[in-house]
Image 1 (tube, rainbow, N blue to C red):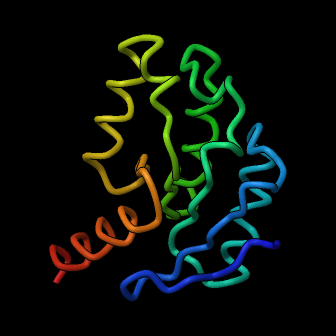
Image 2: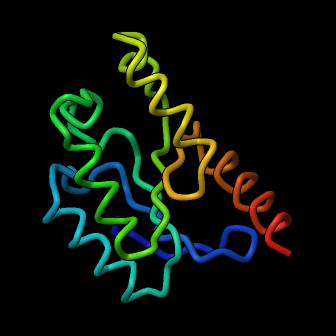
Image 3: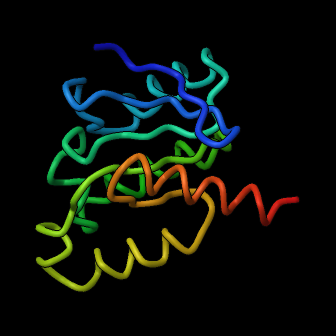
Length: 127
């Protein structure tokens, strides 16, 4: 099943499928950003399964590389799914997730319903 554009509370979101290629680096991020621009998306939602384990080990800098690409192109990135096995491994990732969820660029959410709620709240504060 290909990625598809969805309207979540008035926000165009490119919803990626779990069975797509891993988001393993800057080039893959740019490919996804290009696809998002082609659809008119303002956010990209990627299932946690599409992120390699290195993404969750902050010392590899993969998360920073990927997130910076999205920030450079003013696109939001949402990671969908349970990442508790990664956050349980140490405090740095948990802190990163918490800080990211307080911002407007990168969110870690449990599912599409939580993402929809976050987007609705953001729209409400932007008015």
